[in-house]
Length: 383
Ligand code: PLP
Image (cartoon, rainbow, N blue to C red; front, side, top):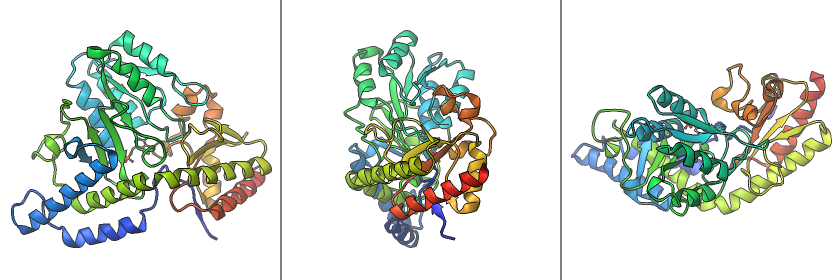
């Protein structure tokens, strides 16, 4: 049985060029970049080059790039690192953020930083005016809005929000985005949109697991969450995982260089999948923006099939050879309904029915046909 993997928002396989680069870096850079001897200097050179390449790919400066262990750590550092430096001030965010932002916000709330979650519409979209109204009313220290939602594929109105925040002048809060699912898959302009902080994760773009990036605008003050040596501007101490960081830099460069081809290709696979699903399973419904909309994440579709719990369906599809997920990967295994679908106004039962299909760099039209066929067979035999 040929298995079909359509869970690229959970993680996407490492790209062959990145794997080759990773192996070469493991061979060549074994030292500790803080050591002064030749091995240390070789590791330092690789690390410096990785930082330069990430900065160039994101259109920012090298001293604005911090390496972390992943999207979760980048989000936690952005949220807690900002709020802990602003006693009593809170965060305004959306109700559909990843738990790496929301749970950090809840932890900060326990420390006295009020948390405001702005609602979304039935397609998972945030109204920038509503967000700005909450900012004017609450005067938070931080606004955090995800660039692209990992479960339903809606995009955050970052450009509009950036403009509105700029108009607040001195009262403007720090502006963070979780861009983990957006890089290479949706427009992203760190400088033009006035972002102060942005989180990324290499394993969502064909890089290694366990590597993240936090963009931090020059001059922005952040408090460290970890203590140790002075690595990463003292904000993320610990000996750097040089080979993985070097490979991650290549994955980020490739994602940025190829997004103009990648986005229409993903869009075409998604549209073709949805057209075929509608033909064989007309009862299927989309959760999130319309699949034909241009202002949505190009690779992500969230579907509900009436009468079947998403988790049960995912397990049955897995037995038949199709790998997808119910809600976000981090939430799978828990019995709770998706907080994203609940925030979009779905009833509890409907919010449990969502199945996420996400395409990636190695997805093909054969995968689309195979997935539709498995979905049709599995759904028919589940009735
Ligand atoms: N933010 C979003 C939007 C995500 O989708 C994920 C992972 O699914 C994360 C953050 C966490 O990233 P990581 O797995 O690198 O910790």
